[in-house]
Structure formats: structure tokens, C-alpha cells
Amino acid sequence: MVTVLRLLTALLSMSCWKEISGLQMITQPNKTTISFIGSNQTFAWNFILTEEDKAKELKVTFAHWSNEYNMIEGDHMVTFVRKPTGNEAVYKGSLSIAKRFHWVGDMARGFVAFQLINVQAKDASDYGIRFRVDGFPPDTDESGFTLSVRDLPPSPPEPANITVRIVEGKTLNITCRARMESESSFVLWLKDNWPIKRGRKKFLFIQSIKRSQAGDYMCVSLSQDGNHSSPFTVVDVLFAPKILKPNKQVSMELTRGNSTTLKCTASANPYPALTWHTQGGEIKQGVSNTLNSSSLIVTPRNDSDFTSYMCIAKNGIGFDSVTFMLNEKAFRTTDHAKPKKTHEGATPGNPFRTADHAKPQESHEGTTPGNPFRTADHAKPQESHEGTTPGNHQFAHKKDCGTETALFWMRWLDGHSNFVRVTSFDFSKAFDSVSHRVVIDKLKKVPEINPYIVNWVINFLKDRERSVCVDKVKPKFLPVNRGVPRGTVLGPVFFTIMVNDISPTSQNALMTKYADYITCSIPVEPNVNDGASEEAENIKVCVEKNLMKLNLSESKELVIKGRATLAPLSQLLLLNVCHI
Image 1: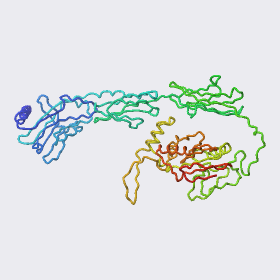
Image 2 (image 1 turned 120 degrees about the horizontal axis):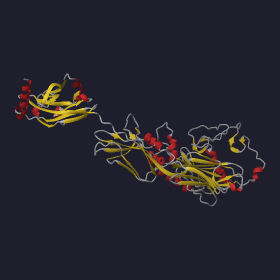
Image 3 (image 1 turned 90 degrees about the horizontal axis):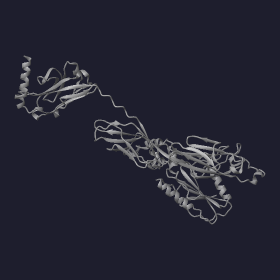
Image 4 (image 1 turned 90 degrees about the vertical axis):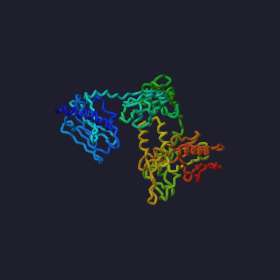
């Protein structure tokens, strides 16, 4: 009897009712749907519903499927009901598998979908749905499929990180090893976890690669189906040694019998082999080597020891060298002269250092000790500490820098110079005016700075914004492209890097760089153009090139003369000339 009823129901749904109904199924699951153990599987159908159909009660039943009668049978697993009022409800059957079924469809669009969570081997069976539109007679349609469950395929082994070694100046070509879901996937390239390029190509080309571009590269494929990252490709840029000395020939004077240490440091990848040579061949004794530096202790005792000593740095890419020319120091007859009496309160051998029990010297009112150019704002006269040089700690990075500069001035005045022109160039907001773009470009060009440090600086400075509130009106935040946050120590460091490439145009000029200003000293000889204007113009051009600005109102010139009569000087574009 049950069999007869099923046949009648199937015949009626296939003949009479389907001729009346406008219900149409346009897509359905594959007749054999394959799923893997542990995965989530979605079964979906699409129907075309008229507005009249949508206004009726809609019912979808998911159950086992009978291939013999071509219809669902047995207890239902999940039933979805949508009332004419738009209210929706989901009813689950008593079977254990029903707990893992969920409705994920959208009946308003005619989209019928059920999802089975955590597919198991025992779930393999025949399933189907019955779609029913309420009415008289009711409109129905049924569809079945077979679910085949398989073991999860083994995951392919994860590709390992690789290292690519390339000589500086060559072209780098890296292939993205991330899994691509489709041809429409985008590829995002990163260097040291910092995005550098985005596109559809799987290849990354870098022409004429530089040492600063060494690092860890990876790619990420971006698609609607998910993102996949590749392992790292470590790019190691090889380059020839470069000895870190401004001059390839260094001349030195040494007294016979005394010892000196010659130092040679090179930047190279791979690390260089450092050797010392003289006219007699390679030197083995007195040599001490580290990874990228070498030192040689020389004690000249014979005439043959006063010769040239060459340091050679060599690796598989190339080599570099520097020569130290060792000359014998001339004998001075004044060495045996009667010692001069030192002034009261001074330490013998150092006319600038105050003795332990000497009376403290007072600085001139309104000036800062150790700096004759900088005026203290409403400051009281300061006293130097006993036993120290006035101004020892007034300068940025070099102790006793003021004393060394004064010795140069005295040497010039004792020679052929009539006077010395000393110009102090003050910078307007020295620390706050440092351009992020310029200082980063300069950092990248310094081979001794690790690219990781450069990337850290870039990450520290980027995405900073600032807003100024005036009368409780707070405007929008704007990006900050200059200066550093207050409280950090990067301000003086960045300023030093910005002015590092500023150098005098004349060999006679002496340029001293402090924490926030530059001093240029020039000896002036009789009837000779001193070149002060050229030096000032050179500094001004370099400062403007670095996107900085001089504070001319605080820039001053100091003229130091000996006994000679001061001749007329060419006027600079600076104020407050002081004669001493």
C-alpha cells in the first residue's frame, strides 16, 4: 500500500501539477558530489520563483533519496519553511546527522542551500530535497544526488626558504612560490615584511640591484578564495671590498723606536681577507684580524722600516687597498731647552686645562662656556668646573672639540696667517626641520648601516599625524613629514646625518660640525683671497639641497687676529662680526 501511494505521488508531481506550475529548477548539485572527511560541504539548488510564488508558503525538505522511486523517503533531516508573512523557520529531524545540517540559503532569491558540517565517512549516501509551493494543487519539485566521502588527500610539503646570492649591479629575478587559486589572483610582494609591489605577475625583477636591497622577500597571492603566502627568498647581495678611509694614501710621522698601530677596516660581502704588505712582501708578525678589520703594529728601528705599508682587502668579487706612508719625525733641538715656567693655576703641557686647585674661570656675561657664538637667554655667568676644560661638554659628540679647534687657530696665527675668520652657521629649528624623505635616502646610501635598521627608522617615522588645537577648535590631523617625536634621541642623530656630506671647498678651511650648527674656520694670509664668501655660499647651497634652512639672525662671524693690523674684509651675508 505504501509503495502504491509513493508511485501515485510521484506521477502526480511529474505530470498534472508540473503542467500547471511555473516552478523551475535551474541548477542542482552534481549527481555524484565528492567530499573529504573533516570538511564542510554545501549542497545548493537555484529555482526561479514568481512574485505569486513568493507570496505563498514555501517549504523545502532535505532527506534521504530513493533512486528507485526518484523521490525523498524516510524521516526528514532538515525542513525549511517560509511563511507568506516572510517569517522563516528551520526544523531538524531526529537523526544524528541532522544536528550537523544547517540552512544557508536565501529564499528571496530562490537560492536553496544546506551545509553539512564535519563530513564523516558514514555520511556517504543518497540525499535529495522536495521543494513545495503551497496552493491547490500544491506545486512541488524534487532533486537527488549521491554523496561520496573520501579521505583527505595528503598536504603537499611546504616549500622551504631559499637563499639567492647575487652580485651587486646584476638583475634579480624571483618567482612567486605561493599557491595561485586562479589566473585573476593578485600578487603582493614584500621585503622584510614591508609591501613593495602589487600586480598580477608572478615574477619580481630588480635591475642593477644594490646592497641596500638585500633582505627577506616573500609574495602573497590575493584572491576571493583566500590568500596564500610563499616561503622567504633570502636575497644576499655580494659586493667587492671598500676600505673605509677617505684617502687611499695616508702619510704619518713617527719617532724612531716608538710604536704605532695601523688600522684598516673594509665593508664587503662576503667578508674580505685582509693582508698587509710592504716592499719586502707580505707581513705576518704584528697583525691582528677580525671579520672586517685588521691592525698592524709597527715599531720602526731602521731606515728600512720607514717605508710604505699597504693593506689589501680581497674577496671573490674584487679588492681594495690603502697605503700608509711612514716617515721619520724630524729631530727638534728645542726638546732639550730649559722647561718654561707655567702660569699660576695651569697644568704643565696643557695651557687650556685648569689645575685641580686653580681658581675657577668665569665666562663672559651672556655667553655659553666653550661657545663664543651662542648667547644664553637671560642666563647668569656660568663657571667652569675645577679640573676640566671650559666647554668640554658643550659640543655634540666630541670631547675637547673646542680645545682642538682653538689649537688650529693658534697654529695658523703662529704661521703665515694674519688672522682667522670663524663663521658659525645656525640652523632654523635644526631638529624639527629634518626631512624624512631626505634623511631616509641618506641612510640607505650608508653601507655600514644595516638595512634592517633603515627599515626600523622608516616604520618608526611613517603614518605619524599631528593636529593643532586653537581656541578649542580641533582641525583634522595632517601627516608629519619632518622632525621626530619629542623625547627621542633621533633628532641630533638625524641632524648629524643631514650635514655629514657638507664639506669645505678649500683645503685650508676647517669645518667643525656640532649638534645643531656648523663652524667654518679659514686662515687669511696677506694679499690672498680668503675664500670665506665661497665657503658661506657652498654651505648655503648644501643646506638648501637638504631642504633645511639657515637662521642668519643667529649666525655669527668671529675674526681672530694676532699682532698684525686687521685689513679690510669682504662682507658676508651674516651679522654680528666680532674682532678678537
